[in-house]
Structure formats: C-alpha cells, structure tokens
Image 1 (cartoon, helix red, strand yellow):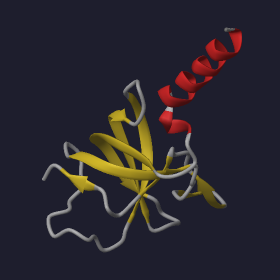
Image 2 (cartoon, one colour):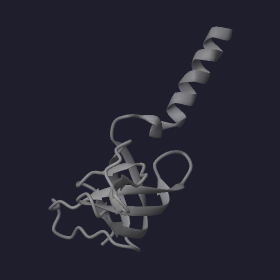
Image 3 (tube, helix red, strand yellow):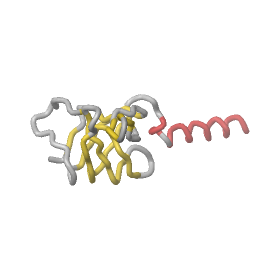
Length: 117
C-alpha cells in the first residue's frame, strides 16, 4: 500500500511540472518589453504573463534574429506569442564596460513561434 502511494505521488509530481524538462518546452505569453542584445544576434524579450507550467509567471527569452518561416510573423510589445523554447541557453550577451556579459534568460525561443498578429 505504501509503495503504490509513493509511486503515484512521484508520478503526479513529475507530471505537474513539465517545465523542468531539458527538451523543448511549449509556452505562450504577452510580449511586454524587448531590447537588442549588443554582442549576439538576439533580442531580449520579456513575457508577462508567460504560461509554460501550471502557474503563469513572468520570464525573459532570447529571440533569434533569423528569417522566419511565416510571412506575418512579427514580435513586438503587445503581441501574444505561442510556440516552444529551449530552456537553459544563455544566448543574449550585452556589452558593458570592458567586454560582453550574459543577460539571464529562461532560454532561447524557437523560430517556429507564432504571434497574434
């Protein structure tokens, strides 16, 4: 009886937090602020709210400056985004004083992300 209760508890904990995966994570959110990364070809984009788990949070992603697959892709403040991102990649680097330093983000957005525009 204890083993089955423990197994079901562990299973529920693992399923309740899908954002802890190290693969691509689905997300959606409202773009509220962005600025260019000066030492890398990315944009620092802040989403609030950002939905990628059971609780909506605010978070920042690095958005690559690549040609997009969709003709009407535009990401700027007040646009909603829906897609996937790769967690853990610190791709946004900013120039400061003597060199370039990483700006903390949750990860890097995939170029297949769509917007509400």
